[in-house]
Image (cartoon, rainbow, N blue to C red):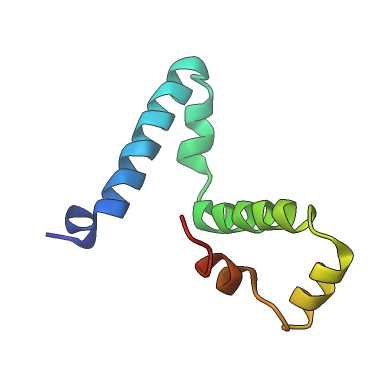
Length: 84
């Protein structure tokens, strides 16, 4: 049994990817070429995560950006302090 078989988060991510790609290929048959030929998916996903983080930061005031950039505050630490 590999890690994917026992990790519910990874199982859910795999299911989401499978469902998405299934629909994508049905609507964009030529997209299969990209899926088969492109080999740098992990770097592309990491870049997209950075872009999403940048989009979030872009909404903050300049004073908060300076505090984050200088290490005085951390969005992760702040978010952990929030109640759900």
